[in-house]
Image 1 (cartoon, rainbow, N blue to C red):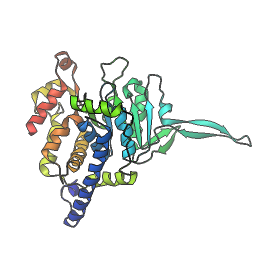
Image 2: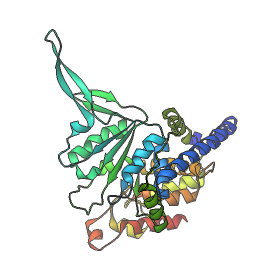
Image 3: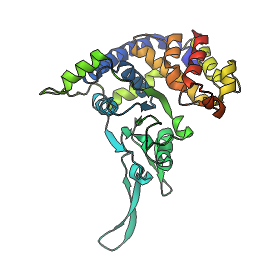
Image 4: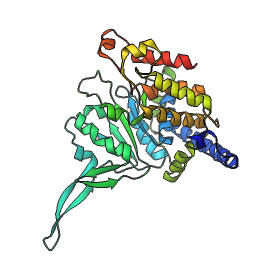
Amino acid sequence: MSASLSPPQHQSAEVLAEIEALAVRMQAVRAELGRIIFGQGMVVEQTLITLLCGGHVLLVGVPGLGKTKLVETLGTVLGLSAKRVQFTPDLMPADILGSEVLDEDASGRRSFRFVPGPVFCQLLMADEINRASPRTQSALLQAMQEFKVAVAGEDHVLPRPFHVLATQNPIEQEGTYPLPEAQLDRFLLEIRVPYPDLAAERTMLLATTGPEIARPVPVLSTEGLLAAQALIRRIPVGEAVLNAILDLVRGARPETAINEAVARHVAWGPGPRAAQALMLSCRARALLDGRLAPSLDDVIALGPAVLRHRMALSFSARAEGVVLADLIAGLLERLG
């Protein structure tokens, strides 16, 4: 941590040049995504932040808002091998991870052979993840944290980089299951996908119903993304931003909350992984914005996406109509 806060002087010029070069490449990536995806600038930005941090993202929104299109486009633009799994109530863990099958050779000898599942890719789209049972949802836990899966007692390493981009329908919709808390914590950000505004929807309508539909082209490579993920961790972070991250995350826990509303209404709050996610994502947001170091504005902008899936209201708070977003907004006001 101290190395990130105070990089050696002989590295400063080198890191500065690398950051500037990466910022230019990421502008090209954003431009290509913007050519295909209309009216979702914030969603595109936060998804790119997640990938630059080497994390996983949960996209929450009603059907038909372009979540699937975004994931497919990202795979092409970033040069990643992508696979898609449609989550349904009857989906089993082996349908995602793979399984062992019994083979018999010409001599009659029998042996088990592992058949990899769709999780063995670089960009896994888990479409409508909350339509599967909790057991199947949990099958991704080890893959998301350890970048490997264990089948029949044997570990199988996943390709790098490995990212899960999951889409989720609002919990209130019929036929959905809440994600386990442990799995929610594995997602770096939870991104809410809104309806597009009038101008964006008009542009999208004209662009997608004509005789020719725009197709994405590769802009970055696997090696380029891995290098970018390593560089993000070398971006310096000032003491003010570090303290703001700690204050925000610790203030969201009922045990250490200064805000009375948080202490009274929150059943459980974010763990240290939330602070790590916020630290990395603030660096990535600064880079995408062409800045050399994160600021308090980055903490405030990304705070909701980092915290909202890592906090839960108590039963009494839900009965009183307390809104989690309002509690988070109150915490962010103290920083501003």
